[in-house]
Image (cartoon, rainbow, N blue to C red):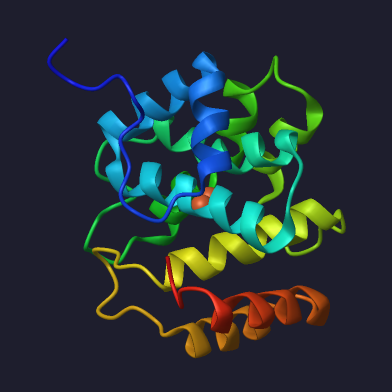
Length: 186
Ligand SMILES: [Fe+2]
Ligand SMILES: [Fe+2]
């Protein structure tokens, strides 16, 4: 075999997250499809799952949900999520639908995993793992380059963004405890 059959990653993905990918061929396959279509969304998913592992010691089902939270992007028109152009309100609505599309793709998965796809952008959801996932999602998105944004946030600026996005104090404290003793951004 020419290529390694191990899931392809950059540095900084936790061993537990990689083991969960390797041991669940369906998840590995869905992530591979995402990698082929939208590499940024793929590596973001691995990093978000790593934050959920390292900051919140989430259980396996939640790690699986974190790995698949953006899987609905498989169904979006090619190039839409990585467009360097400012999207019209109508196209933003199309992108927002990745939550519903993801839940549909994950129809036969346990509720916890489906809910990670469905609610990860929902400020009003009160479930602990959804609140944690939303914070990890925001943190990772703002600390890494995107084609439509000029600069990445520092970890301090990212904490400011979490506050702006109404992430709760206990979750922000967990980020603050994690960041200084480990790498600042994955
Ligand atoms: Fe998303
Ligand atoms: Fe995301």
